[in-house]
Length: 67
Image (cartoon, rainbow, N blue to C red; front, side):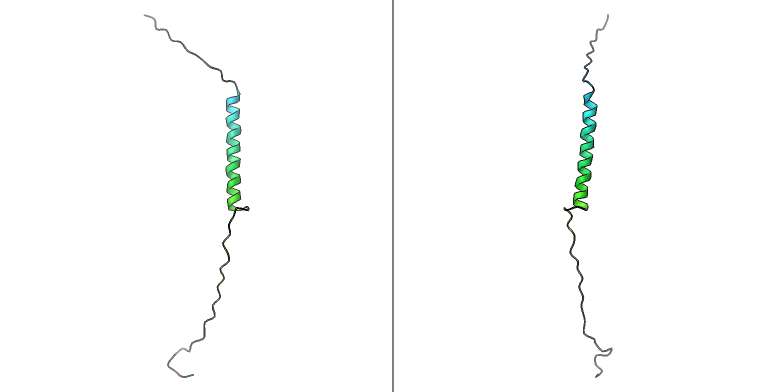
């Protein structure tokens, strides 16, 4: 008995891999651009400076000793 198999080969052209490469590069550029925007660019939210200076009154070494 002979087994008959039919094989169909479809040629999709050469544009498939090139389009995927271009789309991949654009996605990488977009991700790097967004990372820069939020880390260093105008989207960066800086924390305000919190410089707190407190001047405490002087206290004698022995509080029960009269000055």
